[in-house]
Length: 303
Image (cartoon, rainbow, N blue to C red; front, side, top):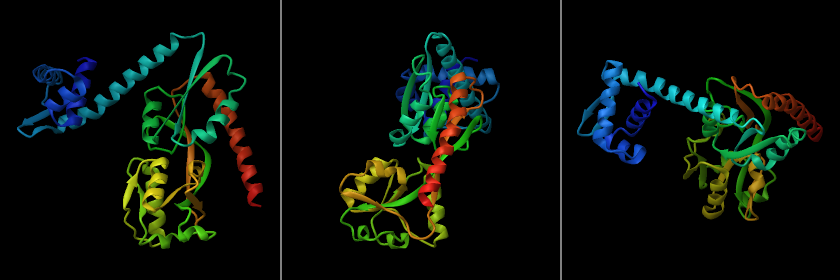
């Protein structure tokens, strides 16, 4: 059994079609792909797929095999990434990922934490959704990420900030005249909701509405701050977003605090438990000092 067999099987399982997997994912001929799948089933000793005119479906054995196949591919990719890094010992690479939008505030702080090491290391920066960042941590492509805590085995999370949610609305909206907005007033408005991709934020907002007895159907659902802000402006809608979104507001969009109980969402740093990078160890030891200072500053500002 070779890794290519696992890649082919995962592609077919995810596409639900030999034809689509061959053309879209693998760029190979379907007869060749079918032969590779038959070879894999022969090696495993059981049927993994059932075929019909409508495509393919996983058997019970195939469903059990799929999770292990994905894990094996992830581990193989992580091993290759570790080898590539080890082959460049003269200048270590420290890869940092950010939940899109958080790099504005946290990249300067992250580089300041490593100021003593900057001459001897190369810092690589990327941004994406939390689910993608967690996957990159698992694959060894990132050393650390600022993200929302995802329920992923093998990852450790440390909280660094607790963000209140705020109302986002057009600057000339009638709610903008208020010092604070009651989310009950969102009912009947063009509400810009959160899609399943930022699932932690979606769950927190859903739970908040449920506790407040608010039933509201989003007119549109978005994946990121920029899209939400654009729709608030163009559709004259309202949205709930973490306060860090304020860094991206144009003149035509404003934020207002919420009345009463204010929901919050945690920003955490995540890293792989097995990552033995000495730079990571240094970073973790210093991030605790930074978050302690930020918490103390926030307490003084409130009091």
